[in-house]
Image (tube, rainbow, N blue to C red; front, side, top):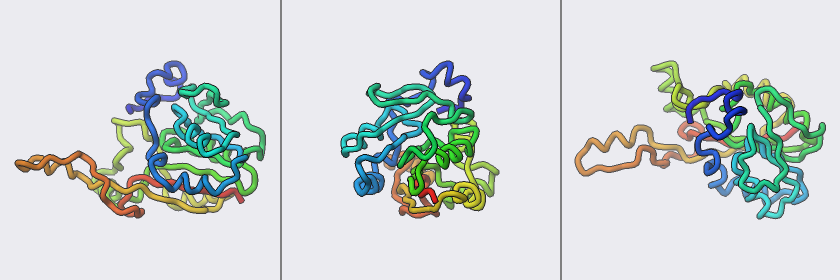
Length: 230
């Protein structure tokens, strides 16, 4: 999706391309559901950037009932879920202090103009021991590093899309891990770079991106972090 400021999206929420059908890669992995399966079904869960509600619906099917969503507009297919319309760059959540057990934010943070308001809000509304689970692009991918070395840019953070920010390792540690501990993380299988370019060879027809690389920091393009409030 091309970059649109939050002011534009608030006035024209229909401009968010593909939001009614899109599903995060995390929803296609077993890891997140294995994690949820070990949690109390009475847990109060807020899905930030909930989009069409795919995660909320999956959690409800698992037996969770205290489910809420938040996004810049209400794109939910099932409007029965409690939902807050919010600009995550400038506005605070309407939840009370230390009232939630879990906050999820799948492929959301990199779209924000303010990376840290959502962090402070998660710190405020989560109970002690509560989980902040979010997925972001993995900027430590070795291919991204090579591109940055050569061009000063990183794949996925360019004029053609709406990704805005990423954090260095030390900035992440001194901000996100100030009041949270890293309880775990898992990676998506990474794509083979430029594989589609081999289609210039007669008889070769390959998709542009084939996810064959190991689930490791150096070759994955996405990571999901599980933080636990201290």
